[in-house]
Amino acid sequence: MQNILNSMKNIAVVGFSSNDTKASNHVGCYLIDMGFNVFPIYPKSGEIKGRKIYQSIDEISEKIDTIVMFRKAEFATELAKKAINLGVKNLWLQLGIVNDEAKQIAQNAGLNFIQDACIMIEHKRFKNDKSK
Image 1 (cartoon, rainbow, N blue to C red):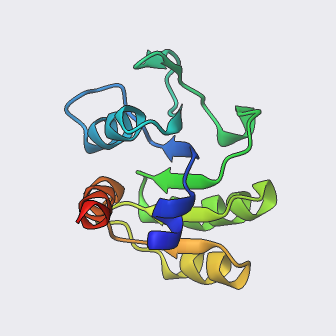
Image 2 (image 1 turned 45 degrees about the vertical axis):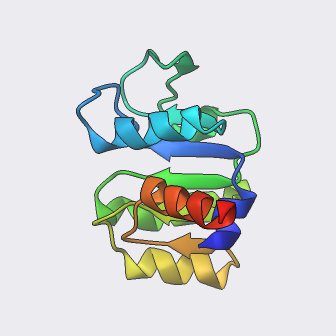
Image 3 (image 1 turned 30 degrees about the vertical axis):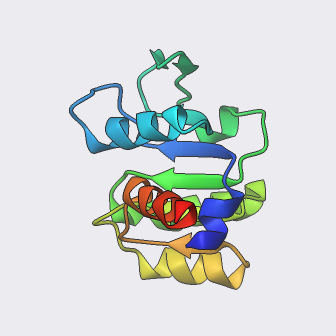
């Protein structure tokens, strides 16, 4: 987990809703506020906190090092394959999302992989641990 938190810079948040009552919005906005270069991925176009919403990770021209997923678990398998093809180092499935097939695919390809954990909670804890 610390490998991911230490290496994150350009983060694609898959399922980043513009609805500020959704967990994906709260977490994605937190990552933006913490200074990460966040790319919202969502089916609807528009902007979130001044960031263009992309409908697919394939539309992003910058190199992504981390993907955070807020979708149903069955989508993680294809996302793991896409992450490998894009050269992404880290794949994080948010709290409540578990896909062991995606985990195996990602780990076999050398990706750092986390599932069923909130990146915001872990980042806050990591940040607090470093300041002690």
